Length: 377
Image 1: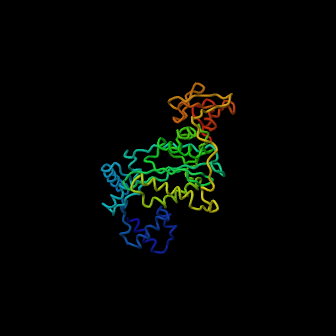
Image 2: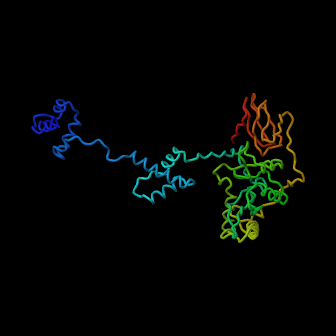
Image 3: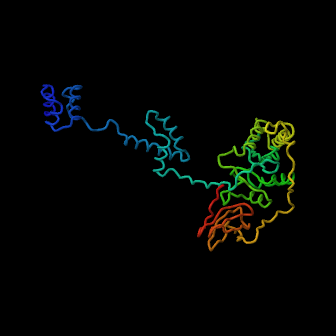
């Protein structure tokens, strides 16, 4: 303290520069400036040693907040960090509660967050989408978003259109979206209109699966019938834009509000289908109606399901009940959708084999590999 007072007096005399004083007292220029500023602001009291204790204790505050967050989480185990923070901010709005991402990290470190298992993605379509310029080249299928009818029951509208003519082949309200309930209505459409060359869908159930090639049981059935399953890219509903546009019209016409029950809703669907096909002009068809551009397919629905046939010279393997085939002494998983089906392998490079189900490419098997490599378009 005495040295600091002596330094101030020496500076006040005007006989010394700051550099000379700093060298004489063995301090840096910034330190000298600090003491001069403190003296100018507070006098000799400013030269006293000040406490090094921080004005705030972030760590202590964070620990208290973590404890409160964990206590609230234990009361509401099914709540996420956003809901927990909303409640805590209402209780103590003056506290510096963290962002939801930080709160989530705190809960994860405390073992109160169960990591979500990343769902397996459906493989991308292995063939490019067809143009569908003529009727029955491409049919488009989808489920219009589910809704509840007036009696509170769910309705999942299965829709099927012809890509070229926009003809609405089928619109059927189902209580569930599974393949078991969907297949009879595809069969009805095949009997009524014949078989298309391809059916375009999204990557959801029951049209696709996470197995090799993305095939579902419904798609396997289509391949038996000589129909090529094609899927739009994930997140690209525009690749099925004509079908999606029909869904907009369907929603505006018969879902505001929904019918009192599923039977009456189906009647509304049929009225819409008749109007859409035979009365409503379509700008994309030069103001013609879809019925003027559509005609049934020349390929009839067969009385018996055709078997998959392969040319000679290919290696054939039967898919076992666990969805696997045996290949070069290894078990290779394909898909449960292919159980009891025959698949073919063709060598395309040295010990590299192309795997197919009928004409549909599934992937490739490399040297010593027990996992099918996905194909890309």
